[in-house]
Length: 221
Image 1: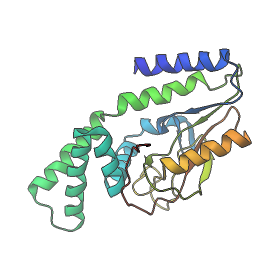
Image 2 (image 1 turned 60 degrees about the vertical axis):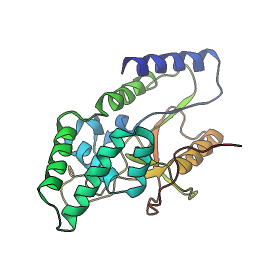
Image 3 (image 1 turned 30 degrees about the horizontal axis):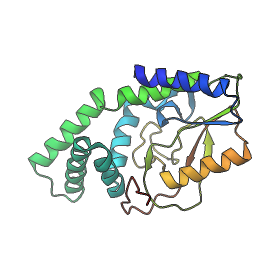
């Protein structure tokens, strides 16, 4: 957490001193507010954490993305995904139920990403209210991964983008939006040109119905 925040501090100083025309900071979704509560970030909700991990595991493309990036951490997610699928199909045995129980207990008690995402949230404070240089701060939605470019996206200020519900507003299962890295790049490029969100914190989200795995990294030749 400390190295992340120290790096952010240096980035802010460098952008200000270099008199950058328009600085676009890409943060994390942890700094986005829980819908309807501007004083509470999404990572302060244990319900969000569980829905976040479930949402990732329900996507073959996202699990493949995590496996490529994180190795063993991605492997545990794959086991969780497979166990949840067995449960949905009515085929879960004791081993599958134990995998689900252990994984979700770990999420609820001390998710492995908590420290990093907390640092992402805190980093926004270097920008919030800062008028010493021109900036915008974009946070991807919860389900951010590699994928195909659609060229279409929606935006929202400050809040975590989620789908509406007629049920419990604190239950985020199946409601989290996402975006591919390719579409987020378009949103950032559009903002760099238009400069309509100066000094604002925003997120972009898009259609994620295509669940085809795509490489996280490319090689230029």
